[in-house]
Length: 246
Image (cartoon, rainbow, N blue to C red; front, side, top):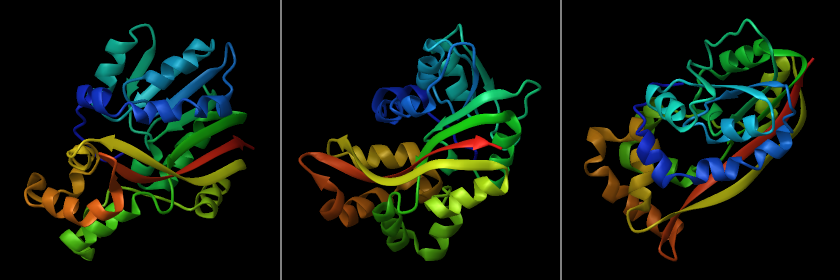
């Protein structure tokens, strides 16, 4: 994952929707007692804890020291490790790998797919949800208008693949895709400052000079599309999939 100075306390207080929406992904994972499950990009650990509550042994990894520190405070009985998904390795293979709202941060995606496949037992499951093709398209278009096409492309920290693109990537690394879906999930951030809050939390790499002058331009461009009923609706588009290691 790219280097991001996450404010874990702020993330927990204002962006709970990330793990609230991700909770339904655990139904697709179907963790079982005694299984060993890796949570890639675990953040403050809420979903790692839910997986562990099913009786599984868990390991949560994240590249953010702030997130790992918060996860250890939140769930001191669970295991969390500071690790980058593209460089992670384990002596003990996992029955399943789980990831929510993290894989679109990981570049190059090929290295993440290789690490995930290597972490799994033969027949092991991989269940994930992350930003897919068309995710935050309005926000990226506004950045192009504000910063210019070339600067936006240079600063863009995300990878938003289509279903066929990501399925092919996984299959090239020995993972058979069992199900995959791309769907819209407009997500409300309440208040006049909701877009600014989202940009400060997630789009720091694209904010020139810390956002000076950019926030007002972005709000002006995006208000007709994304602001209604007192909230900014972030135009999320998610890719959700299940696969297994051959």
